[in-house]
Image (cartoon, rainbow over all chains, first blue to last red):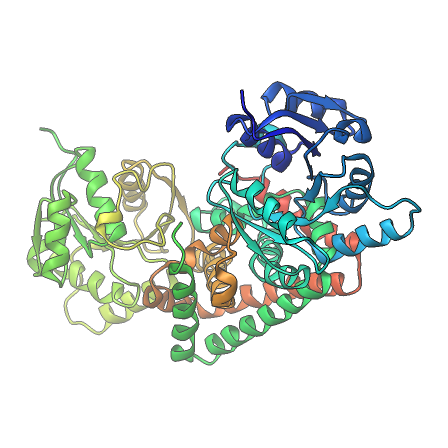
Length: 287
Length: 287
């Protein structure tokens, strides 16, 4: 069997990490997929699902022979895991992550590296696979989670072009489209397209009385679906991207206010304009 | 063939009216399903889809032998069509509708009736099938659109209990669950569970820049799906239920403000509380 890579190590084998492992193994891209984590039960589940070929709770041992290390832990833990991997992985290895925020992760990785005496051996470039689910855990994973989905990578000024290209090909090999953005451009765009909708969906659900819930139809179910996402994961994401999310919230508050004013003053033209603009934006994307 | 009813007339054969016809015919519930509308092309499409067994642009002729008349036109047209049907349908007939607002329709039906010299022959009771789609037209319809869905009926003080019971059985025969609410209770609950989410989804979509759209993933797509709904239909609904929708918008604005404040002041406990409440409400319903 000619796998494209010998070893891929995945730190954190939940929905994203598990799906990544399933995708690599289904496509025969890696001879070994090492699942690394803290909890034995989670690791064993990933092994049983076929998402990884071996498991360990020892991060350094797990990444020791890895061509690729993908850190799929909650965003607050990502920098520490990235730095540990950068020291323990081979020099040719690229370490990346799957975190939904980028400035904070990139900054904290640099801070942690600056505090250490030894230089890192491997190379870090941030990634954000724009795929996921309100569900959690490897048992909800899919080998095709990334198929036709977008992965944003955030090379920095000192990233070697060939490393960014290798990372692009890594995600493409799993069926993803890849776009490059700076960490700052990433955080601003993703605040608008992902973090704001998450906050709004959560607040819509939180704002619904238990009594009204029984009347919920597909509209409410669609609009609030992502509110079922993991609370602590999302608190971390929203907090790490605080300034951009606040800017998006304020901008949304203005549009909400325009709409409320238009309804209050029976301004049909403005109501129609806003509803038509929303329909135009939504119709621009297929389902 | 022993159909349960001889003739059902449907005024307005779009997504809801067409699905109703498909459901009645699939289940063999009516010998004749008469599609009534203004546009020949729409009527012919309904006939070709098998949603109705005959078509006419003459409302009075179409309902003349109907055991049931269901008015499925946009909410601003419903009262006029209901009143026309009440005069032209047989005395034993029940006229109902599929409008998403109820106080305004019930009030306008009474107003129009009070302006006429002749008493109506048939009986009106309002209905709101809580099923639909952002799609429009009979070609997106389904005979099972109402299966396991909720239909709210709004009997009034002078509604005979046996008529409310007959209407309940009518919707149940199509697989729906039926709940009774007053028109006022309906409008308040539906503002919260349906009209507010529609407005919010539209505003989220309208608020997204064309540049950010290319980064949209499933979260954005789910949360904004209903923004693709018909603009004029929804402008009418939101306007007819203006006071209740405004109350829901103001209440949502308060929760949005609490969340924004919590994020601004790094109040993790409050962020967690709101996200957890949203998750709890969403998890209470299966998909």
